[in-house]
Image (cartoon, rainbow, N blue to C red; front, side, top):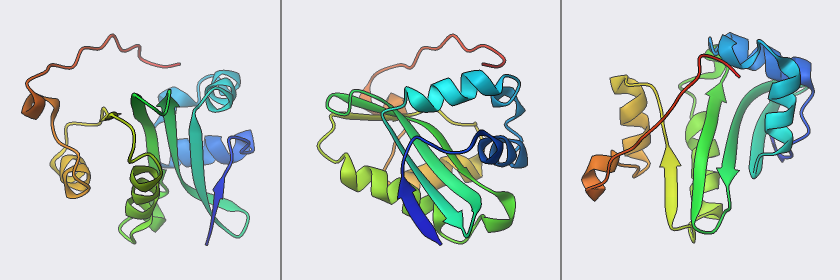
Length: 137
């Protein structure tokens, strides 16, 4: 497996991985998905030969805040430490950043994953999260 830092990922590979994990709302408009990657702060992807099998994508300024926008690993590669390695690389590289933010599905397995990497619910910091979320990009 090869880890690559680049925002330039073939759109077909992006479509395949987002659809594989059931995130179809990202693939309704592949042009917008491509633009989202182009405007991202940081993208780290993992490849098995020529197949994209995982990625993490950040938005933000990299100083006061980063937002973990996407962390995906293809289903057949999940539970092999790939997601942990992707997240670990980001947490290490951006350890100087004041706020590391992630909004995720309200599932115990997902919350447990992020807690394992020392991310906490925002209520632990006496703050509240706000959002206005559309059904797809």
